[in-house]
Length: 238
Image (cartoon, rainbow, N blue to C red; front, side):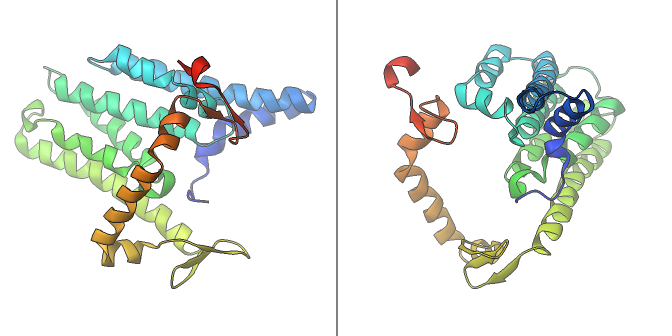
């Protein structure tokens, strides 16, 4: 697991719970959970597109990509993560382009979004929270308030990430380049490796991207669905 907070799994859990309360069959309960995940993302998507000051069609097109549809209609935590990501981006851009003074409702809202999104996937989505820096201080009552708000948003995000990381670290035993999540040691890289060897880490990222670029592109457009058991023909993808 890479997430200590369990709210990312809430939609599917709600669906299963409703199915059990209604005494539905296994399959009906199973698909009810997936339906709850889909409806949850649809709610996030509605408010994200509504909040976007521009590029609504582009954001909607990204939301309808095959790999996105697959993830949001499953029990994956990507349902909440992607929903929060789109809504966070929309809110940040709304604050950036707004001609009116930013209200406290907007400030509280973006702080909550940042705190909820930052712990996702070991902090992979934490950089999105730094979009608050593009908002001009002139949008606030005073420049000083602007810096305070930006600091508060980033602090809430970093604090949530730190709490999540601390919880996960307490469950992990590390030795050299092996991380033990359960009983089976898995070779991997640790935060210490990244900090002590940034150039080496960047090289690993670039080589991974170049070596797997075709796989990333194909999965993005739905060539491989499910658990990669079946490959969809490029003819149908086009």
